[in-house]
Length: 219
Image 1 (tube, one colour):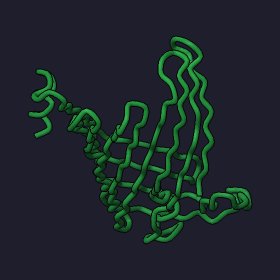
Image 2 (tube, one colour):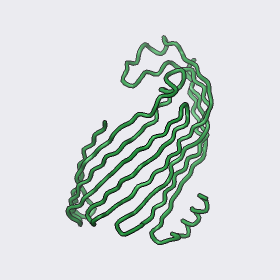
Image 3 (cartoon, helix red, strand yellow):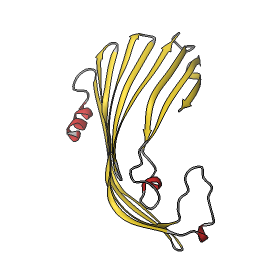
Image 4 (cartoon, helix red, strand yellow):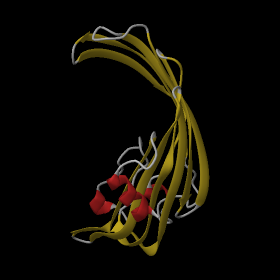
């Protein structure tokens, strides 16, 4: 299906106002570190793909949707000291720490889908609500849903335009591997959750020149 759609894209849009793009990558990611008795060897064979379909449904409405997928397998051998938690002290020197050993293999699966709408009730105002759904299947299984919204209002147009913009959204971040590996942390640790908000202003200073100031808050 992806090859067929890509082939159509090469020939140009099939319907007016309909655009499609996609990309994919395949390959191994190899890392090997050995210092004395310390060993860190990992191999990840992965396939990643991202695609997007955009439809101009009306003069005031554009709808976009697509996918963002990473799947693969891993094989790892570790013989390393305990990794400190972020913000904690480093502890004693590595030479005096007990080494932890772990060897394992498994699968990595992080599929996601997203959809957004660009709504322009008037020429000067854009409103972009969106939602993203992620599924993580590694040491544990978890679904997350992230609603978000952005808006922009232009008080004037042209090289000296003035506009304000703002956004509010929910974001999730899967836990770091050192937090969920059996020898270091908790296998069923859940993704961290953050509410991001921002507000800013744009001021055009002439053709091709713009000054913008933005405030950002994360909770």
